[in-house]
Length: 155
Ligand SMILES: [Zn+2]
Image (cartoon, rainbow, N blue to C red):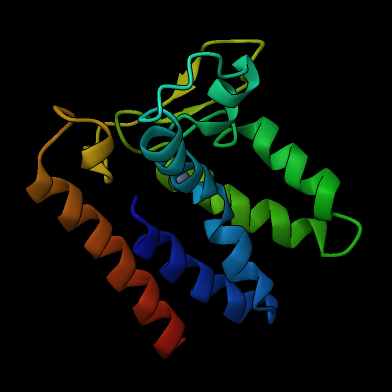
C-alpha cells in the first residue's frame, strides 16, 4: 500500500485510540523507503564502495523493519511511553496492508526467509519495476484510502 492508504488507516485508528500517535505508528514503518531512497540516490551515486553491511539491512527498500521484528523493536522503544496495544494495532495494520501485495513482508528476518505475501500488485512501483500494473496498484490503494477516510469521517 502507499503512504496515503497507511495514513488514512492511521486517521481511523486515531479516532479509536484518541491519540495522534496512532497516525505516526500507522505510517512509521515506511521510513525505510525514505532511508532506502536516500541510500540509493545519495550514497550509492557517490560510489561508496565500502558501505557497512548493516547499512544494506537498514537502508534497502521495505526491509526487515516491515516484519514482526520491526514491530517488536517499536514496542521495545516506545512501549513504555505509549499504549502497547495501540502500537501493536497501528503497526500491525501497516504490516497487514503491506502483506497483501506481491512483495509482502518478512516474517522473522535474520532467522527465516519466509515472507507473508498476497496477490495484489505492489503500490510503490518505482521501487520494483515489473511488479504488477499501475492501474491495479493505484485502485487498490485508492480504495483502501477511501474506505478508511469514510470510516474516519462518518463513524
Ligand atoms: Zn510499508
